[in-house]
Image (cartoon, rainbow, N blue to C red; front, side):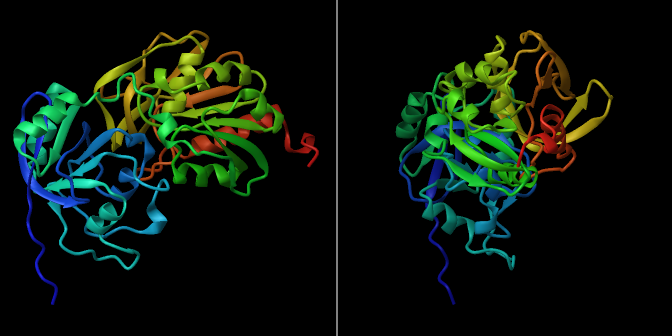
Length: 368
């Protein structure tokens, strides 16, 4: 019979001085910190933790019971987690899924990600909702040390996080009949799986020049999701205009934001962002409402992007969620149609990308 795990007291201290009590789990840490945000998904915690879009952030799960089905190598969205830490209310004592390889605590320890459990996540979520996402620090150090660390955290504004998550070299996935080049700004594995059904996908680093992409003679270019401030996403903003009009372009999340910047639009930091799997978005062209998965702290300013039709709005707060360029074959959405985790309402957008590519270069004209 296994021995009960030793409980180690820990605290979370936000940069405004708010203190929360809990217990340490995951990788041991005297002090760990980052920008504290909350996510409202009910399941899919491993996919959330391994989403590169969370680089620089500490994830608070609002759903109280996390870890009950363990973790699986099949469910990871990236080669490793890039988040700074995990905050939970109740860490499951045992995993109960035939698919699981290890429990959540062991998974986080293996990837050197610290966590804090037993915390009043309802109070924390209400505080972040009212005050906004903010830097915080947690661990087994004393509260004064944690407060100093929280105040020293820079957050995600004005920080280049894309370079920390992008692939260092090209690789190919998928088996579809078209050729797509995907800029890895922090791409998720589920996103690549869906692209791989419609195309053979060459994934390239975020700093790849447009000339190299066009030399591959792709049928389309994909701009992926990713972390942080789009104004600090590197050279991609200057390369996108060289692609527009040459090849169809589809952007998701950060890809949507950098496309907007490339067109002369502007972005802004949101109060606490959209992080969850139940965000309602309406297509202004049809009136149809989709329930979407989202994960972003920055947004495109409505009305700031010239030469586009704004196609989608968030019904919760009116945020701009989609646009189509008027003169060239390109479109983008702020939400995640691949939804790992989340609803499948928007997966048709990958088919729309395929149709857009075929409208520019029919299959018969590819010479393959």
